[in-house]
Image 1 (cartoon, rainbow, N blue to C red):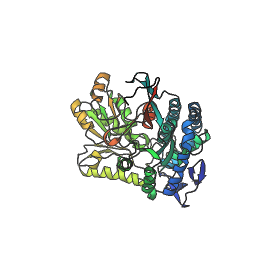
Image 2 (image 1 turned 60 degrees about the vertical axis):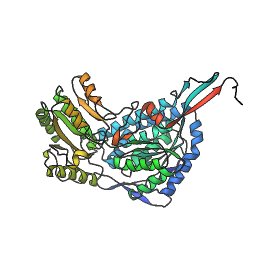
Image 3 (image 1 turned 60 degrees about the horizontal axis):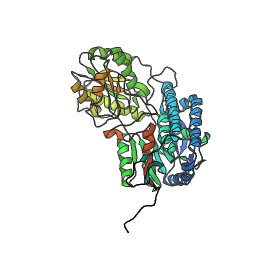
Image 4 (image 1 turned 90 degrees about the horizontal axis):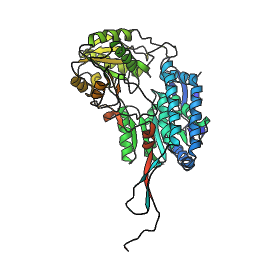
Length: 486
């Protein structure tokens, strides 16, 4: 049965001002799963009106009360894990394990936000003048614009709003057109039920063809004081440029071209298991997914044989089936894009080890390539699908050079039994995150998450997320009257 959702503005469910709606397609069945309001610039203005009006009271609300709301929302989310999994399967083709992982981590982010509300926010400074007390205090910015993506809709939908709200800001969310319920409206429902006051969090869904105009209206509104965006590097450049034009700080968490480096002392079986997880979780549609497996010459033959065999055996298909590992991509267009990357690479000399071929709707088989040449598009482009390449290296210097041969810089994994050596290699990689003796996909609510170069800038998580959505002010208190020269 098709569900219908409206915009959330000022605590009320309201239709788009234009009366238009947009279809939300189930990627596995190709059928319409939901109909959502197709908001436009006028609706963005209404949402910012509500957020701006709610800001003073929310910023002044007791930290203990804000903490209670986040803790309650976390409990509600965990209690609705099955509902969340159903939504994610229908909107984004998410498998059950991926959905439950989303629930757990998103609940953790909410609890970390709760802790942040009562954490210390400031410093006492030494002052040059006698009898003066100097303070550096952190205060909320105002209205924050948040862009939430579809691929990890609960994790990234919650992350888009939790730190800004915990810091005392109000938020207007533009969720992805591919998962407007999971990464926008469902998250808002939980917080609203947990007691979030009206207008503090507003959600404007939109039709795909209106996305650019809606985004520009949101970023350009002078009452919006900061922007956070998670998504592709291509769109992130547009959002970042727009924010800079309006002199607004922006936190960008963008794409990756991530490598798992398997050193010659690695446990091959562990490396295979780690790599399969890092590549094919959520059909490779994670910013942290491993695109490249770099394996030492002495291990590459054994690793490739074992890895390819395991990949070929992965259960694929219906995301609602409890044993499915590789579900559909978010759309048929995404599956065709991945197939085109494979065809281009093979046409230019790469070897197809398993998978490949034409997709079945939004389903693309788990695919492994070796010998991908630099002139192939896949060598530089983010796969963002169930696709990985294997390359060999003779020494650590070559491994580092191959891993760094990208404009991106999000995450990396180094598989080794020597942690000291792994750390030495990790320090040479140009990424925001490195996991020694693990693969590339990991996130924790208290950790600084983000990349460098074309993978974005700024950090979500822990105190770094609060700092990203607050501003430092210098205050002084004179304990005695000053003497002036005139």
